[in-house]
Image 1 (cartoon, rainbow, N blue to C red):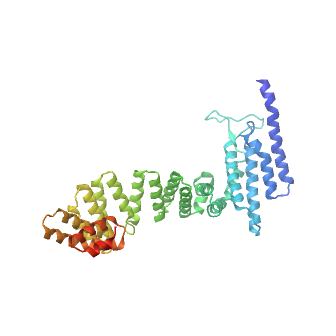
Image 2: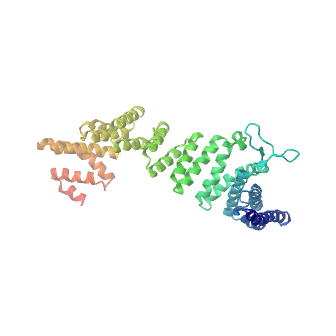
Image 3: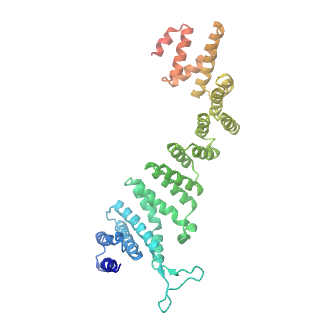
Length: 400
């Protein structure tokens, strides 16, 4: 055991000497970007050495070097010098990580005037105090808006979405931390919510859909509830194949934006159809119709729902008809009403009634075909109708 201690001591002393040398270099060096980086490179072995990797001062000095290098970049930028913005952004994130490690290890036993360690009477454990934490928090806080800046750089200039996410995560998280609580009065929730939204976007672009969803929900918690937040979150939930979460998001979106965008009802509708929850779907559609009685799409969806539930189109007629009355140019409703008459005609054995129903289907299906020439259902139905009316020219015009 003694041998181990004797062998380990020179290693510790070597790393300590390295730290002292780096601190001396910083005082003597011409303060350039390269000199800061050289000092940091010199110190880095101490950050991974088993004897010093949990030493607060080592991490603290590394953090100060990194932040100083960042400040040098910014000073150069201010006077119009060309800089490597990506390197500038990277070094402040590196410095932040160094400082977080320093905070983790920054605890020093308190001693009385005789050098005896003080004991906490309540816990029986040694009392501890911090040596570097106050200065660390001061440095990190003084760069608060820089995290927002470098996030923009990584997003817009270098398309490094993971680093943009990290920078904005620091920016949006700090006001909720006890040591930076004054930021809560200085930075509006709407700003934090906006950058949580941006954070979600870069996570989505990096295909980290779960992180993106967490960011979008945090944006909503801050009151940032613009429509785009819901739409991006819906897309991420679809990628994650999380139907229950999808429904939760859509319900919130519908309550705010259902009048202007019917996609939310369609999503809820499709979810209900997928799991054959027809009663739930009917309640959803009926509520939508009650909320927005002039929305043609909701009536058409009600008709489709009844068709799926009952296995027959019979009860759907009044809803398809109402949808077309509200919006004569709504193509899907025209198709649904046209195919209703067409399907009813196919059931008829009496020629006169068959042709009467086909004649009713004709204008709706022709409108669909004019708008959507590749609509196979409309095209095939029209071919049968023209055949029954001996209209060879129109049959030929349909092509294959």
